[in-house]
Length: 487
Length: 95
Image 1 (cartoon, rainbow over the protein chains, first blue to last red):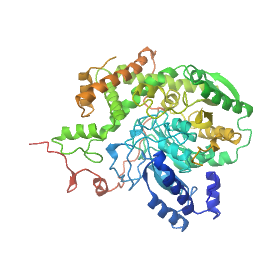
Image 2: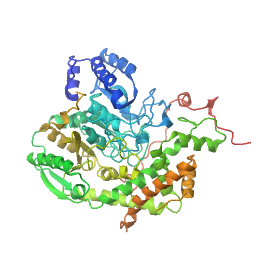
Image 3: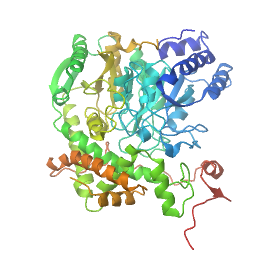
Image 4: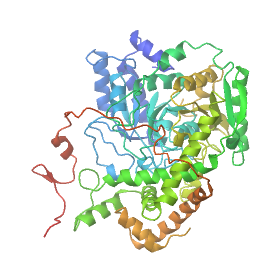
């Protein structure tokens, strides 16, 4: 069976009875069976429940929805009732969630069929997917290279065609960066657009759910089902969700005409690899060809983003991860002699190195005598970074930039050097700190490895963001390329 | 900025992380490198800048104080390391 290429077509063909949910699920489950041994993109499979669910949908026994029959995978950070939710950690290796995350619930209500849970950096802390307890994910474009992180499993699974779409989360770039490195389209919506309920917390003021798919139009379909107010998440925003799918469907070919697109000079300065820059320049030329007005802008506090983020995110993580204590769920050490021993040994044995590093950085910057110099200071520089964007959006409609300084790096290359791994996030952290919506759109290749174009829009302007990416994809075919061996 | 083994030991104690001396020594070097990077914050002029705790500067939303059904205790305790008669078991804390 060959499956329809876009989610829009797929949903229409299933509605017309040309393809069944069971056929779609079987097709993708077969691909997972054939390729995941190589990629390690999945932590847990749900083949049996997926088959039952697809059959129920076909029999009309399960409620139909706008995405009825669409196979999907969830990042293993989203709680799935009755299915192990490990968050890539030994700490939760035995954790079977007692409830569904709102994102999971909503996508199920829309008719999706969950095929599995995707691999990720432990507790979403990493930029290469190498910190997972379940081993690294491999990049389908070259299996010696990392897929990016932390949502590396979701990005690799979509790139290799193991699923048409997958969920992810972005705290400092964990959707945009792996999307760029794996050559798929990814969107991180505005902070508060998608509920965090049932999404295992890393840094609560930054964490935001989003998705990966093969095009902006596909992403619009998935985001449509995910987004919206949820009273179970106190920071979820009470605001109507626009009709993303309808907007893209009715979009004319002059969408970019007259749009002011800002190029932040700090993102094109020293550090950006020349070959990647050429790819980004060509993508921007396409925007210009479609009538966009390109202007240079400045986001002067960009250089503070790495330090700001690596104070605030670990601080929030040290607090959030205090709940893993070996008492109520998760890993417990053998034969604890007393309560203190139970806590310290369960956490010492259950968490991996990168997680322990970040917990300790967080505990340090929050500790007495250091709080003002680090944590409070970083909260102030965070405002400076956010202000850069609100000032810039006074004059431009959209920002375009690279996602990373270079394409994917080799497995193991940066694993022993946390600082070099952190510096890698320099182009994605600022928008996360500001809470802005952002995308990565496939824009070309360097030595066979994909390069992503980053697009950022003002708060809650996901429609504009998706529209711009869609306009670009209407006249380019980078997003349709498939890695050799995974056609 | 360089952290001593004792400082790292203290942070590990605050974070309830059981680490051996080899691990403490390795983390001392790594954490020092990370703190060197974040030290650049010092140079930023933040005079009259309000700290930003939340990207949208939202006020906490209030809700009606109503009881809502939650997943049952049995579901939660089914995944606990040790329970008995509806309570969680931990090593004895009172002699």
